[in-house]
Length: 108
Image 1 (tube, rainbow, N blue to C red):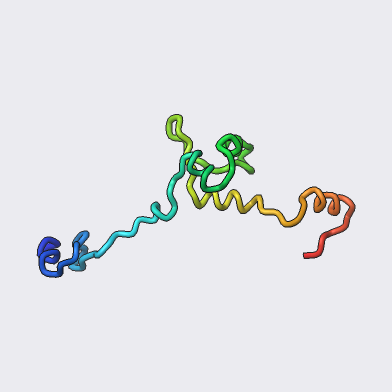
Image 2 (spheres, one colour):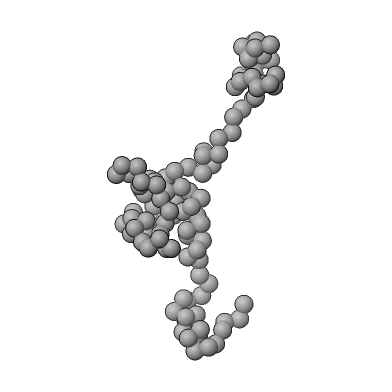
């Protein structure tokens, strides 16, 4: 049976024939984890394009991971989420830093 015959008989649209099994759909993971331009990433994260441009040019251990294609800079949504998660804080960072410098740890 060809994919065309399956479409005709079943009434559903077949994507392709693989070892005798007709696939109903193809799942592409990049749709769930798209590449974003700096403008789109700015809208998604809530930071300015200028801040994100500085972030992609930061030192390698702190930089926002990106893909440079010609003049375009693209950011994967999952990598932007992970980068932002590394910057999560609880409380005032300056107070936490001062307590650590004094040898006083904050309760967990």
